[in-house]
Image (tube, rainbow, N blue to C red; front, side, top):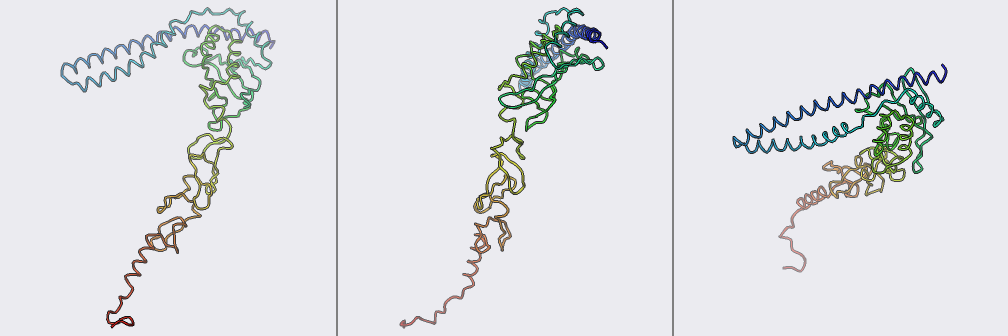
Length: 338
């Protein structure tokens, strides 16, 4: 099919999506109004419950109602701010077919790698390999899903897919500090991206997303750049730098500093799970440096055993030997004693 015809057909598809988006906004307002009415009815119900509790002197019940109303009002305040934001959105005019065709031409000029898929109803561009502070993440495909355009007010209709994924050591679903499960954390770019999608400025949309991918915000990453490389602690799951890990010679796993220790007898590095705390001295030791007491069969570190006995059993043996020693005969006197 000729490129121009592809542009026309794709432009029709985009125009349909934008018209559906305009309708979806009106339906979203209607849905929010119904929800507001329900929340208001719940507030009236709680007011009646509070009044009854006061009249009957049920002060504990009245306090419980106040606490619940406080929580509901906090949620209602957040909900109301989002509702007002939706109402204050300008009624964006739907672009013409020729405007959308011009956008598609501009995408071709701006991006060396792009794809218009009529069958899947998607528009994709591929970024250059992304590098942030010396950490490489490879190229990403930004895929706009036209069939999901009308869900714009509930979920963004696009994906950010790593083509040569180099995920974080702690989470294989995080392929970029601001991308998780192929979803971009837009941060401060949320409003600009939303406006570009609403107005059909598709080229601007792709440029804005690429701008976020090429910028690292240390305040809101899924995984910080400093924790990206390395490996995961076998015990707590914390990301460990390549020079900050400890290898347990007993279980052959890597651990962070908080989940590892060392044997007080032979200085071998061990994890807390493999360490044994001697009941006598309280020091952690590896299983190679432990032995059982010959008498009580309890396990101790080898430093706390004397002749195979723990301190308690050794003292008990001494007491038994003392008790079995024969008492001196009073009839026998030492020399020179009358």
